[in-house]
Image (spheres, helix red, strand yellow):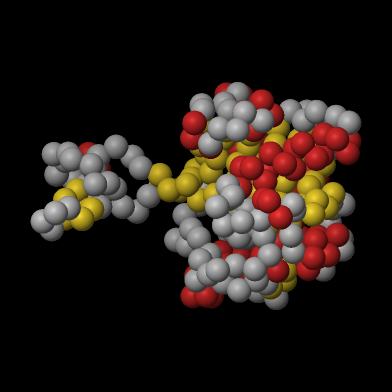
Length: 250
């Protein structure tokens, strides 16, 4: 099996300044992602792979080029793919196209790992790839159980007051359909679907559940600080989280 791992990050950020090149607990945030890939590949020496880093940030590209864990291919992001309205799937598709040209080879799976998800276990990556290979969906992505449910305790504004997002007669949350939050940490794509131009949920999509760390997105400075507090706790309490942190070399 041949896998293309992609790590994509823009320069700057509207919420947290330069978050993709920030340190997280004293180590480059992006190194948590390459560490997870490194640990996975150490357990699967049979896999052929390439790791592509796509960015318009010179600093991020320099960080990844100098990382001592795994060799990576650097892709300087085209300005046409750097705008606020560009979907990440378009950038990943560009990575695939560029790497196929460079390596003159096809890939069985494209796996994208988000830079802003440092609390990721190797078992999550393992599970993602296993599910994708076994069930052969267009896309497999990571989720966590949602803390609120549109059938029960989420509301939307209407002309007069508010009402439930989805009309229902459920009297207890446990009766409502199970709902998940897409945490954007991991995606696995089939090559054909990635080249189709469709959106993530436009095809056959499978999911894997990840540990709920309470913070899904790094959009504000307090999100970053809170995630560092949570990370310290998880690194001390759970070996699976700690090994990714301890494997980082700078």
